Image 1: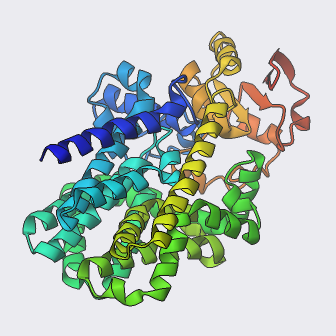
Image 2: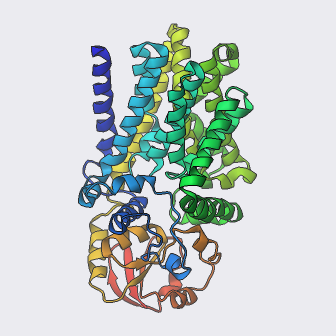
Image 3: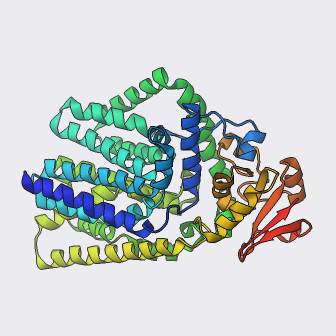
Length: 488
């Protein structure tokens, strides 16, 4: 028992240190964080789910309700907001640490070997895609935890036939509907593949029936009328109809390289960034029977391969690319990949396999160090609340008028958060689909947009592919090395 306690303390301490290190010197990093902090504060002020967010001009213009899943914000609203704001960089590392403790506990419960469970936890701890997700305050790490725990609950029910695990899976999976749209998609995809494999037909059908019954009885107005139909389905349809424009939008910010680079470069990136996946796929191809002889291995194999196939379909086949940023599906099959990898290695101990695990971990560690170095550098970039942005916000706060248009729009939420002014932005898909000439790329004349939304100021980033020549007719009232503010 003492060994288990020491291992858990080690996991908690090491994971918090590793996941927090890149942001020790900066309070804010990224742009989505400010939207989530703003929603959290509005929930506290309104003592419930806000129906509208007036600071987003386009949502207000179309009278579009806020339909973003808000389980994370619901949790955070119970803490004093000044501490949520100040310590936001530690929230997702804490969530990820809870995820790790759960995965260690499951591995130990199944394998009855604390060394194997510890190895699985350490390798999962250093997964580069998970490391990247916890660097900003978004619902993604919480969604990953919920998907892992829900599927683990179903698996343990299949192994033990103890209804405690099924009830746990129901309670946690219901939360996914209110946490993160992409987590829900990944969860549904995993269930579909598990259902097709005929391993858990009755538990899966029962879980979905109970989940939707709970949603219908207790959350009908919130989920079916606001989140599902007003957000998720409309957003998927919009992505399907505007995928080429989304790529063009990504190019403006030099981000989401997975969308814009060639297939060859994506394949090379996949091999470099996923050593455990590559080696596990080799093990499966040469010794499939090992993974099929055991119920637990079969279920974890379907979970892993199902989401891996979803990843390939949504990144390679145009008809499926509207289902989101496909590489993110790999956030949700990291655990079964690592579990099966470690179990196979330790079931076939030899010098080659020991070298493989050492090599894979080395590649993984290098990838994490590369990502950490990138986030440290980003502390002084345009997606960080750096000294230049502070000067801009201080200047904007002193201006008498309210409506700001950021070109491009990446820092809109940051500007809104620190100036308390309204920005030309959109959160509601209901408003989004009504602006085909504004999103994902601007097609409408700037003068027309400025007039329609009563824009008072333009905040223009100089080094951007956005056409800013047409804004030169407006008087420049403030300038920094990277930005210009013009009054309309």
